[in-house]
Image (tube, rainbow, N blue to C red):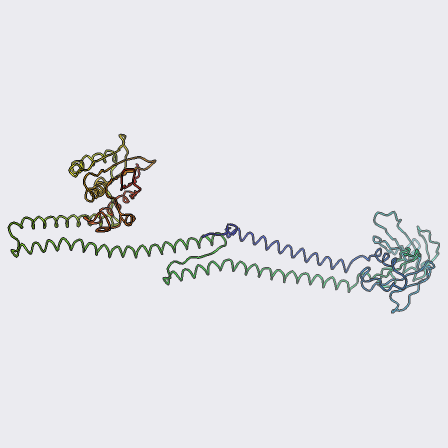
Length: 528
């Protein structure tokens, strides 16, 4: 099953990746909420944009002053007064609350606007025990503005100043403007500028200072930020949990369904899953298990069929000679056979009994090899010398049948662990088939060859060959009759040979025959 390699990651990596993603998302939410909160707090506590206000007024005519965005520029509940060069009020934004009046001296006491200035008021008693008030205006920043100092007595008479003010005393309202305490709750500043018509104007701005309402808005913004974070955290955690639950449950549901299908005998069941490596491996292993179970079941059924077929074939092969033996014996017993035919009948009975004995012995050997506890009697032998001895013993029989025997066997020793009795049976089965089922005058060829850590034994003949339609089944039990050139045998010889070679840890196959030969068996054994 093909799987997207990009998804073939471990569950641990998936957890770490999603934890990092979850953390990044939380961090992003926190940063976003903090940024929004800061924006809101900056809006609530923002410094009035007097420069922007002056630019806006400068580009408008007196009829257009009502279009000035005061709330946007200097804050909610702020208002302004515009005076001409003669200090006459030409515009007032809060006319609905009553017209404001300013004297020339009051206007002088209003401090010029600087966004980085602070006013400090200090009360103290002089050497005579009289109460004095010191007002200090500090200017911060890059400009060279000199700090201003005013000292007055309890009657607001000017005792000392470092400015060029020529006043001797202040009215209460003038001193309130000087100290920024009038009107109550407002910061009052003035700015001089020229409009687009080059008219000299004075702007007096009244900006609310931070009070209880402002702090209520700040508290409200903080509460909204906290609630927003909690809600987003819960939602994000819920999404993360649901996503992880789905990632884990999906393969488990698939696996559980597949297990139920296998339990209910629905045959091969395969899982098509892409995801974390651990789950993918489990699904792959289940698929392999399912395939093995299916193959095992198919093999079991085939073995059962082969068993039934084997029993039928054995019954047939036993029945035929027994029927002949029984019939001929009955004929002799009943005196139906003449003296001239008696020897022939007895010879037939002998041959059939001999054939029956061979069949029983072969089946006995095949059954022994099928037993799981059967073990070969292995010895470390020189396979070259072993093969030469076998061919020497077989030479006379081969010669009588008019068969040429050729062999290519190395002189140097090649050692293998073999069961000499059983391996001889393999040689005998192959050579006997060549002798039985081919005409005289054929050639049989033996070759022993070392290939790396294995030994290849090739046995070939140039007889009539094996039909192509049964080559793939030639090692199955009871391939006899019209289906094989082994029609005079039991059909167990090659099946037994395959069992013996496999018990040696080797293999036996029919391969494409070399030049001048029609049939070639190839036996591969492990070299020791």
